Image (cartoon, rainbow, N blue to C red; front, top):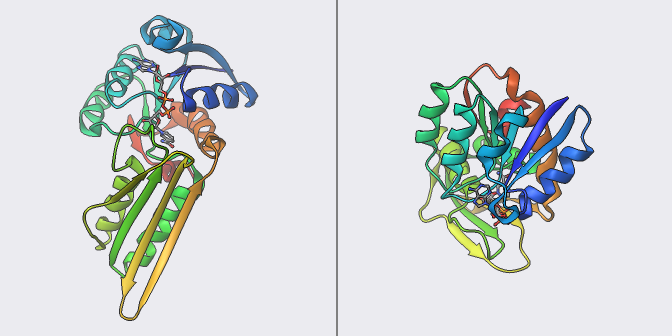
Length: 221
Ligand SMILES: NC(=O)c1ccc[n+]([C@@H]2O[C@H](COP(=O)([O-])OP(=O)(O)OC[C@H]3O[C@@H](n4cnc5c(N)ncnc54)[C@H](O)[C@@H]3O)[C@@H](O)[C@H]2O)c1
């Protein structure tokens, strides 16, 4: 049994993760941490093998570093903070850190398809659309998509467009433009359950990852 702690357990994603862990085979929801529940992350680290963190850009680095220092693997979904500092902390740690800017398989496939298209139609723009309580912009998914397109020679025009409206969950469009034609890719997460198979997979696999620091759900597929 993998003992899982959920950091940010009172939040929109954290609550959905708690339910997914409880429903998954081979793991148990061992502890929940969230200031809103009056439980500090540090106080649960002795009871868990893996922490899943969906919190805020301000606290994610500190939370992940605390897990790694305690020898607890961390699956991080929080976006909007600098990953380089975390990479350094993870490489010196005795536990693994897995980060995915997007845990939905459809979003990962959109990123891979974008790379394939950009090799032939390099000019493109990204529009990301999220609910109006999202704290960071552009989204971690959009920044990662731009990085991956750039890595194969694509040219993502700036700025990345961010739409924030009630009613939205997490959506992204990539529009490629060529001579006399455009090609559009779109992914819609219409419910937070879309992220759960990816989160559960990361919890199952994190202990056996070959590197201390891994970014991207595609590395687990
Ligand atoms: N990677 C993905 O696939 C993915 C998908 C959706 C959302 N996200 C990201 O997940 C994060 C959370 O999103 P949300 O909509 O659930 O936010 P939310 O505001 O609903 O929840 C955040 C929770 O974190 C708690 N929190 C704050 N400081 C904390 C601390 N120090 N320790 C523990 N908990 C703390 C808050 O009290 C709150 O309950 C955001 O960064 C968002 O961009 C990632």
